[in-house]
Image 1 (tube, rainbow, N blue to C red):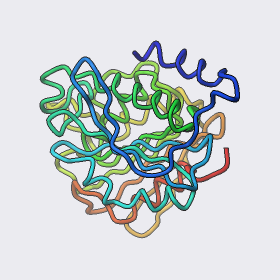
Image 2: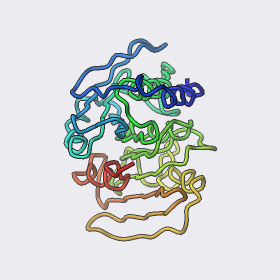
Image 3: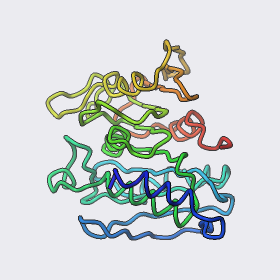
Length: 268
């Protein structure tokens, strides 16, 4: 499916104007047939999101749910800035991100194919911009955001929170990255967890710094957070945000940081 996605997006982009997607304002549950069964996602399309709006795919952690991720407040930012948000649900509350995790991994679920199909569907039906697709993920969802970019997914940026690279990543998509980690996280440590196939924070972002043709990093301290940023080709950035004493949880300031750093609300 991933090899077909660029063709699907190209066909959509080249369609005559009278066939362009009409944005579907409102909230709906989307069902997508896949080889792994019918997959679902909650889609929130605010009235402010016109044709060519950005799309933010928000991925829950292992044991989590789409509805729990929605409670973090991304709908409010989407309504303010005219973005569409999708909250997909993982099989067995898990995602197959390579060496992790749970039911999805043990059953070999094709989550990357599911995400590609989800994006293609929203390009077609909601008129979102295929050049402005962003993945936000917590824990296992963060692992999957890395894996999606590593597999050549049609992404402009990823924001893994308490996530790690859990697959090989020789030729990732050049994307903007905001990677958030806590120094007290024992589930996904900053230093990595080799026994469970979880790369360190530095090793996780390294492929994106390399492929992004990034310059020298700049570091600043903001309260309990130490942020290191690389400016990269094409206006992209790679940022790691290490929060002192933060455990394996969603930090209260994370939502706004991710949104602003990835420039999701910026004009196309």
